[in-house]
Length: 131
Image 1: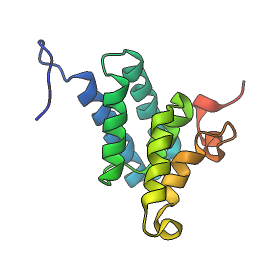
Image 2: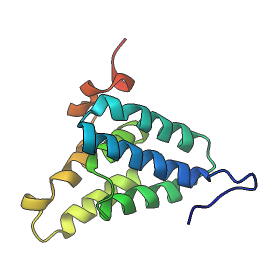
Image 3: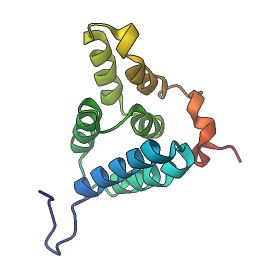
Image 4: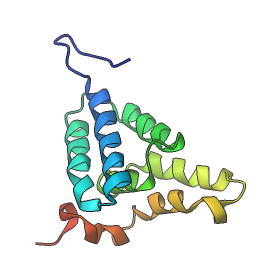
């Protein structure tokens, strides 16, 4: 059930979830990083409004990823921008706890790699372009 505010609008947490899932839909259907980027930017705008606590945002992002509803790319983009250490610690722990990280750990490795200033996927996004 969607949480709505007094005016009946979706809460920022629900809006954040909707934008994350919209980005995932773009990636699933169009395989396009640049077409998903506006969703990521809207996620950052929602987070910047501070109506969603950082803990709530982290819990949402990590739970969507863990459930398979969200791939590594949206998480990586957001963490490249936000650099929240608790998400990196979570990803490192999840990778460490995997039975077969060499076979199944690549998505978590990609999230962890996004914390590097020279993250390889940054070249695909206008948000990180020079100039």
